[in-house]
Figure 1 (cartoon, helix red, strand yellow):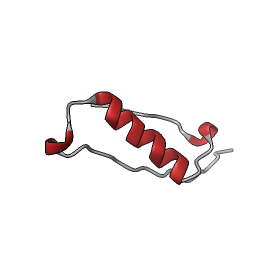
Figure 2 (figure 1 turned 90 degrees about the horizontal axis):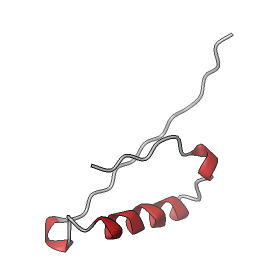
Figure 3 (figure 1 turned 30 degrees about the vertical axis):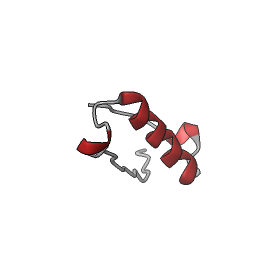
Length: 50
């Protein structure tokens, strides 16, 4: 039997003129977005930073 589920995705970027290469700022923005969306940590399957 095959199980089905819904997958959601969102992307964040840092503006070039606002420290786009400063990784801690981007990680804080990601954490803020997770809290704002009230996501359950068990619902997060992947986090990719590039």
